[in-house]
Image 1 (cartoon, protein in one colour):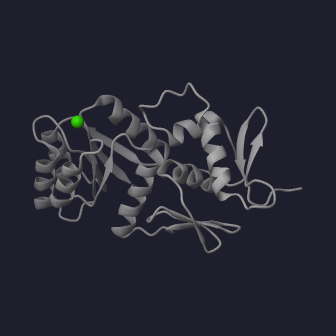
Image 2 (cartoon, rainbow, N blue to C red; image 1 turned 90 degrees about the vertical axis):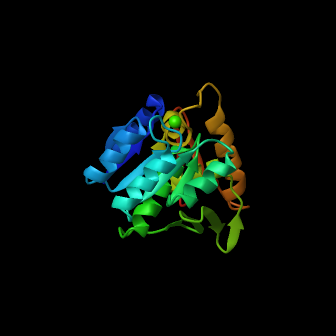
Length: 226
Ligand code: CA
């Protein structure tokens, strides 16, 4: 898939490009609204990540111009933290979805998947392992029929584990997948979140679904070998 990033903050654009490349997407970047509009209309892009505040043309105007020429192009708007007005504006202006900065990369990926699914490319919306189910669209999790309350970061961590079931994941791998570009990895935050997640997803009796692998990291394994 070819994804257009319209974002004037170079560090964020780089972070997005690197992550999307790593997941097999091709990426083209524009650093102002005019260039972004031109690329969205002229290039065969499949999806746009659009920052709302941009030089030359702001995101709303970019979106309006894109919609005139390419009404069906999926657009995910990036908005500033806690800016309700911007979110409403983004959806009013015709964005398909929005994401508040700073965001977790896995959540961005989930929303990209959801948007491309809506525009016709099929992928399952749920991941299941023994007894555990997560829904990628509603961002809900269940053990059996019982819903599990998770924060968005805990959900992203669980999704990452379930996508890499049976694999040993280092703390660094987990950090770069789940924490955003603002995060300084100086603490034991991964261990803290794994502990939270275990408290919520582990069955009340029996071994943890998330094993600690000494000196290596963690492995999610719902049916560990004895
Ligand atoms: Ca900006």
